[in-house]
Amino acid sequence: SAVISQKPSRDICQRGTSLTIQCQVDSQVTMMFWYRQQPGQSLTLIATANQGSEATYESGFVIDKFPISRPNLTFSTLTVSNMSPEDSSIYLCSVGVAGQGTQYFGPGTRLTVL
Amino acid sequence: GESVGLHLPTLSVQEGDNSIINCAYSNSASDYFIWYKQESGKGPQFIIDIRSNMDKRQGQRVTVLLNKTVKHLSLQIAATQPGDSAVYFCAESRNEKLTFGTGTRLTIIP
Image (cartoon, rainbow over all chains, first blue to last red; front, side):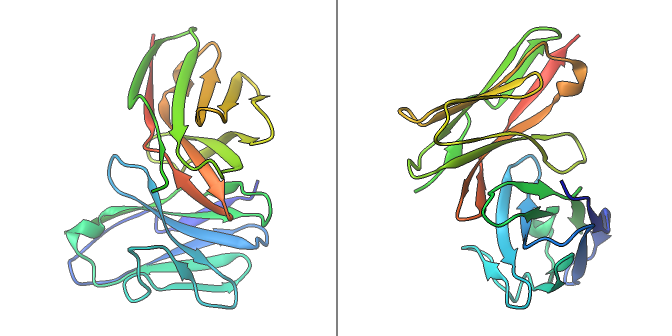
C-alpha cells in the first residue's frame, strides 16, 4: 500500500479563518478522497478529488466551504473555509486504485476551532 | 436509505480469547466490504476485505464472514492481544466510494 502523509497533523484555529490541509502520496494514484470524522464518530466522505478537474462533492458538502485541489497524481489539498467550532473534526485523506475498491488512509489532521 | 451499521458499539474481551465484531448493511447491491482498525490518533488501517462472491476469507488471526441472505458481515479476531484494542469499522464499497459503519470499540482485558 502507498505511504500517505498529511500536513498539518493538528491545528487550533480561530473562528472565521481558513485552514488548508495537504495530502501527499509516495506513488501516483488515480483516486484520492477526503473524509471528515467528528469526535467519537465514524467517517463521512466529503468529496472525491479528481486530477485535472473539479472535485465531486457528497450531499451536505459544498465547494465554497471545502475547496479541493488535485494538481497531480500524488498530491491534494482540502481547505476548510470560514471555520466555526462545528468544523472541529479529524480530516482524513485516502487513496484508492480504480476498479479495486480498497482505500488506504493517511494519519489524519485534527482540527480544533475556537 | 442506505446504511452500514454495527450491532454492538463496545466490546470487552479477555486477552487470549476470540473476538467477534458484527456489522449489518442494508444495500443488497453492495459487492465489496472492508474491515478497518483505527487506533487512537491514527487513520483507519486496512485489515481484510471480502467480495460478495465469497462467504469467508481468512487472514493472519482474522477471518471475515459474509452472509448475503441476511446482509450481515462479521470480523473474527483469534487469540486477541492488547494491541488489538482499537475501534473497528466495517465499510461498504460501491462505485469506488466507501460508506462506513458506526464503529465498535474493542477493549482487551489483561
